[in-house]
Length: 200
Image (tube, helix red, strand yellow):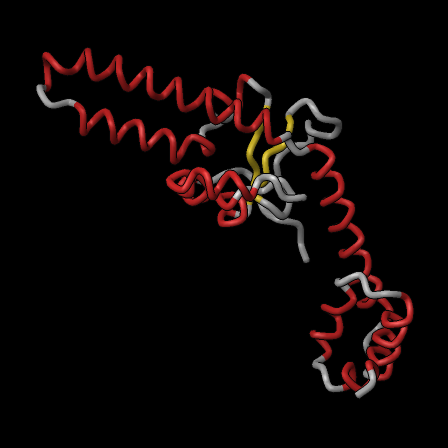
């Protein structure tokens, strides 16, 4: 079966999605021909191609602004140490008053570590190192749910950390929550965070 025959057997929406895959020139020409045979307008095709070009440009821009593995690990270390110090201090202060205060303080520690990326301005470590976590696509603001799922994978720290060595610098938690870590001081980083993803 030729590539053209395969294309003719696909739904129109599936063909439009193929245009978003960055096909080689010859394959793209065949997809365009089949779409035009079906009466798909030039405006629709141009809109799909333009949205894909915009997505690729946004992704390249984000990659250039992403935080390095070392700086991200340092931010995590600062958060961990700060939360643990506060944990110890609270335990010492509450012990005479509440008796067994450890469960309460431990719950507060876990609450901070799991939800810290949804704090306005970022967690202590990320604030000090000028980092921010955003949801993709569109660099949307973090939610409590996204922060929870992103940080839940710290329970498997070594496995989770291995993923950050990949080309996209996304650990397992980032993949699960659909997030990336950007440098606040990188060029173009002052763009306001979007309330919602860009229209497809």
